Length: 442
RNA sequence: GGAGGGUUGCCCGAGUGGCUAAAGGGGACGGGCUGUAAACCCGUUGGCGUUUGCCUACGAUGGUUCGAAUCCAUCACCCUCCA
Image 1 (cartoon, helix red, strand yellow):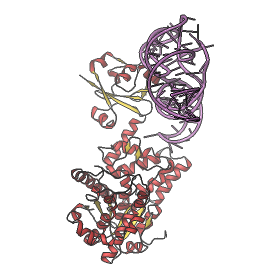
Image 2 (cartoon, helix red, strand yellow):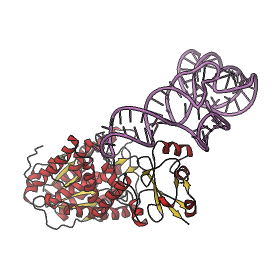
Image 3 (tube, chains in turn blue, red):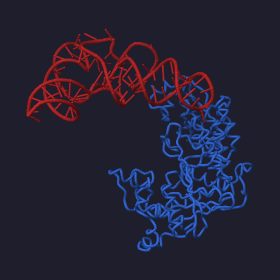
Image 4 (cartoon, protein in one colour):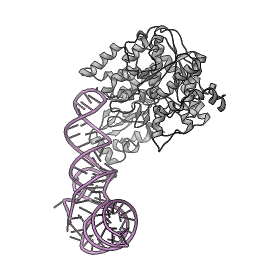
């Protein structure tokens, strides 16, 4: 694949390593001379998108920052079937209500994030940017629901060759796995997705579909259908799926996926996820998820190389992405909470500030009277559930892992009202990262 | 149906009568170094009290013994070989 693209968007995506494959070389020419409508689809499998989806959203964002016009499809119809691509087993079918709910949630997320994306780092916007474009989110159920099975077979199905379909990786892999097989429903998935593209080509002048590299088969199904039925070109581009340096999929932790919905993954947890990325992955993440320029990214990564960064690079990464997904205010809050949660002495706060900074942290209650009388630190650690037994609590404190308001304490410490960090709360910490907010009540 | 081997703490695994709350390794946890990274170093790792102490624990139950993870019996489960 040539990297000497004439269109500014492909040049940018190329240096960011965001291009896995494109269907036709004429795409570059087209993107270079006009503003192109493009789309990507999102599966409504959950009521929130996660950072795996963010990879594709970034693709749309880069296009828009170069003056192209993204559409998004929330797969109300396709979600009912389930994409077999990259899936080892057949997906469970979801109820209509659940899908509708998920689409509504996705739609809001997609629009806010894409809107932020075009306003961040205006100095790095590409050619032709600036024209207002309020990204529509469409539901493919709207144009698929009225088809009858017979009409669909006659008008759409006849353009698909089974030989070709079987040859696609997403299908082939499942067919060779005799254990799993592939239902006809799933097999038909690419017809539906192909038809979506055709519909968008016809009604929205959409000429390009982008997606993860596992979407290649589905995307080409669409470009071929358009060619056959309309006799006009249509293009596809896939983006490499993100793997970390250990070869795992990005965005999964022991605790589960990293979601874009703050109710599922709080902005603080989201921010922390990025802070904790391995050095080896940082460059790739900057290229994929931020709008910083090539020079800025090179300079930041050079700091990791020469060790002069003092830990600032991951913080910058985390800040940029949190800003994009949750907004600047939430990103600033995450930075402040992180300072408090990583060592800075906790004092002089009011209840409200403390509660919001430690929103992530579990809490326990202690009676006002008991605190007035004084509670031994070991008992407090056990009573609040931060330590499982008194022996463990003693061990912890003796080893220097017990903290009140981020001040190390010894085993003789009696906790009283003097330890309150705000009107009614104080913060216990066990080891480096385990925090607990103690609230006084009664 | 016959012969033999096994079952130990979160996991693996040593231990064949007292010095065994049980070697060693992994994991986990705490500390140090550092950048909230990786690597590395030190420490901790049944419960309760902590200065010596008490309780509970080596598949289950019962027994021998001053004393058992270690010996005996029965039961349960696992493995190997022969039919």
